[in-house]
Length: 255
Image (cartoon, rainbow, N blue to C red):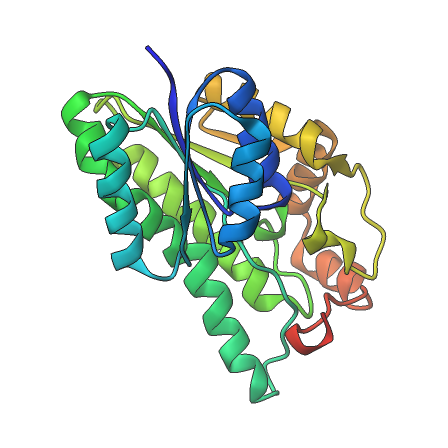
């Protein structure tokens, strides 16, 4: 049976790289992103059976309509990857950054929920399928100047864990992937050193291996997994001292 895969944030970066990996395997793809022209170009590039849908993951009604169309044409997907995400710094004392915080949480947290929701009933009825959430190592500890981004990724990790346990025994798996630094447009604007960076294509290959194995939680690359483990156990006083002077992620108006 042909594998059916739905990917959000598919027009560029990791999402587009994931689409290329799955297309090479002959999968039927549902690609979702805000930019239709980029999606159409990617669909033409990868070939095969591709349905390209323009949507913002904040729009639950639109995502539900897309799910109904995809399922009606191809059947319940085998894999749904909630990859869409946004990143920006924020400073709590600035009025303008309240809107930035809202935007980050709506995309990075609720966007995952709205992506999964319209497919899950069909997966539960079929007693199979994999839901994949792309989080970040930034969700391990709160980084200065990136409170909203760190908190959104922490919330994503916790939500995905809750969902994984909730669905235990149902036949539906939940995979949480927390990437380190991946070379994309999002990271290109970061003004600090980014160790162990992977290309989007290499990251996508590693992600797909983890998805195939239905790994419940993984940090990619493995070097960042070690860093994440150290960060988890670092005493607060030492973490505060080490990161207080760290360079800050650019704010939305600075990107």
